[in-house]
Length: 191
Image 1 (spheres, helix red, strand yellow):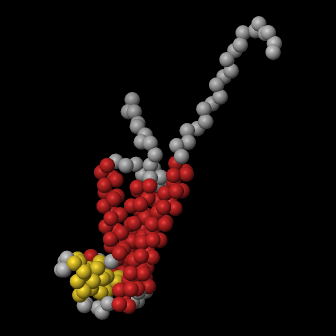
Image 2 (image 1 turned 120 degrees about the vertical axis):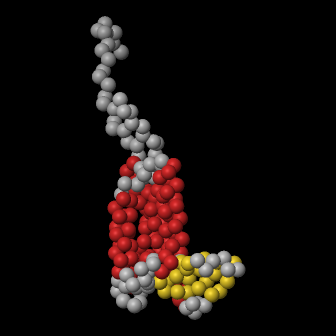
Image 3 (image 1 turned 120 degrees about the horizontal axis):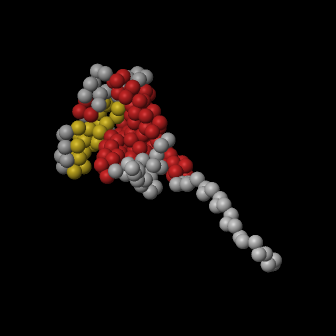
């Protein structure tokens, strides 16, 4: 120790490290979550369709809860409510565009809630695309296997359920103002 009579000069403060809000780590976790959920939806959808096509007779209704919910195998060339049944190729293109768009926007996500919504939507879009591409009657014109009958209103499948709940969750998150990036909300001063 030295007894220096020189006044101590404060050292210049080191530059503060760049703020790391953890977004890259959250983004990679969100992407993994999206992919895990999407794969789970595809597997659940395709396995239940395999069961339906091997266990049910086309058009035959089996009641589960009266007339509210039942099982009825059908092959749908259109969309919900058999909309545009003669334009199957349109739905093939739409499913492909939806899958690509969801993957593209998934790169920006850091929120687990949004990742769940995107995972459900992506899984539904991919499995519907697979049906359109690889099921009969031909490549790109395949009919989707539907087997869950809802009160004589329409017949759907597991992918439809995933898409419905993914879209509902996305709507709720958007209305609630949940940011796509997750983490703390950033406020921007206008001044």
